[in-house]
Length: 298
Image (cartoon, rainbow, N blue to C red; front, side, top):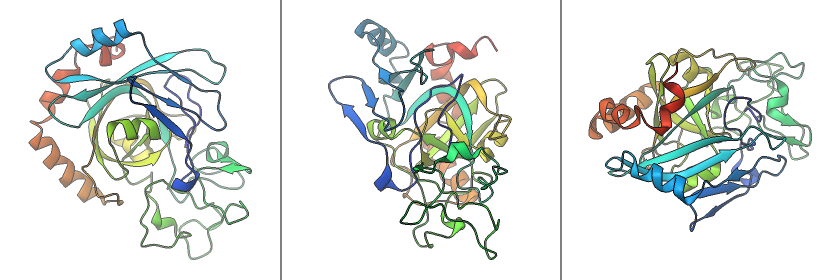
C-alpha cells in the first residue's frame, strides 16, 4: 500500500482491519471530505464556491460535483486538485487521477529482507504495520511451509474472505491476480461505496480499460498489480504507475462485501455497464472537460 506518490493525489494508507482504520470526518455542509491521517501531514482543502459552481454546471445533464479534493504532499507543497463527480441518473461516481501500484494481498508482496513485490516501507513501520497482519503484540506474521510463499509476511487487504482463517494468505485479495481499486475511507463513505463494490477503470493514454473491485482502503489513485497490467501500465509496485490520465468509475452498492473471482467481476460489471447504457455514455461525459483536461495533452 503506497503512502507517498509524487505525481498523484496522496493520502495516508490504512490498516487492513477496519478496527485500525484511519479516522475520517465528513462534513455534510461542505462538498468535501477532510481526512485526518494519524501519521501524515497530508490535508485536504476545499475549492472556492465559484470554482465548484462552475464545475457543477459543466456536463450538468450527466454529472454533478460530489467532492472537490486538494491534496498536498507531506511538506505541504505541490497541491493537486481532483474533482470527484457523481452521475445524476445513478449513484455512480468517477474521478481522474494517476495510479500508484498496490501489491497488498499478494502472498509475495512483502519480505523481511525487503525482497518482495513492494518495498517493505509501504507496509508500514514496526509500530504501525498496515499492509501485513500481526499478532496481538504487533509482531508481523510470516508464512509457513504450507503457505504459498514461506518466509514472506502475510499481506492483507481491507476486503477479505472471512470464511478463511485470519492467518490464511488466501483470505485476502491477491493484487497480482485480481484487478482492484483503492479508495480513501472518506471518499468511499461520501460516495456510498462499500468494499466489494465494482468499478470500471480506463487508461486515457492508450484507451485500455478493465473491470475491477474495490478491495482496499488507502490512497486516491491506486490500483492493484493486476489492474495495472490490464491497463497497460508499468505494474512494478516499487517503481511503476502512471502520473495521470486514469479514469475511475465506481458503482456504489453493486457488490456483496465479499472478494470475488475474475469471472464474477467480469460478469457483474458487464451487467452494470449494460444497464448504464455502456461505455460510450461514460466516456462522452468525461471527454473534453475538467476531469480529463490533464489527459488531453498526451
